[in-house]
Image (spheres, rainbow, N blue to C red):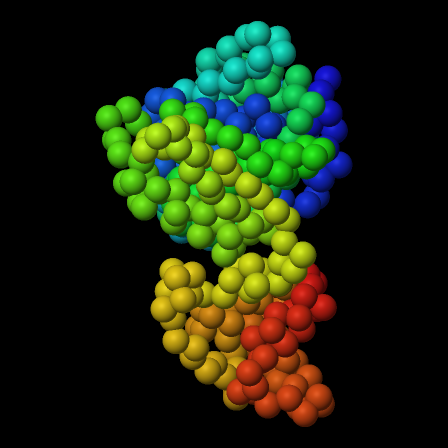
Length: 337
């Protein structure tokens, strides 16, 4: 039995991260690359299975639990059905040069959506993994630990696929970069044959936006260096570094997604934001998102009243420049109740 399952079992109660077998994280979706929404569903499925991902069992989750996750869409039976179809059709290829074996298979064997209680808004989603994935997981000795909220907040499938691949390499000793030929990079990013043929377009439309988004939202800072033979780009070296201070990334994950792209490219104006002087934050998505990102599940009216009282005791104005950071830290101290 591989070490990956041991790590997944040790983190069974860690809802903030997903342990992904490196064979899957570095897998190449050569055909039928899943969409962004399907990739997020895949990460949720693997994270939910955890240390049992290699077992020949049916895993399950209720729709109500999907809807509690920041960054996941507000799914219904109609929206989940095509996503499971995508995952069932995706082809995962893993080349193991040590064993000199190429494995071609898939992730999903069968998914079921039980909607007998749909009227009350309660669906039971269940699935079984294919034997290829289960064997990869069982034999895996290398893994990627991905911050789940980063994956759920990334806005492009290219960002997710690059992030999961690089995350599987981060903990390797003395390795801080990897060179990809252009065909390898296209495969890692899930770009189909015949699409985005020119490297200039790949760089402008895929690679540069993916790097910027990962750098903004994750604990990693990625760089890309093209390597030319003559005038032709033959390969790209992706380098990575773990941030000394991940606070700005955590702040972005906790903040509202509106304006995130503008903040990323530096075109956003700084907007002064005040905490509500009275009442609940029930209908204020910005403060609710900050509370949720901090891991707090206190009632929205109660947390607002307690925070205002705390500010009064500290002499902190509700429109102070650091009011958002203060609220996030306050919510983190309260935690789950």
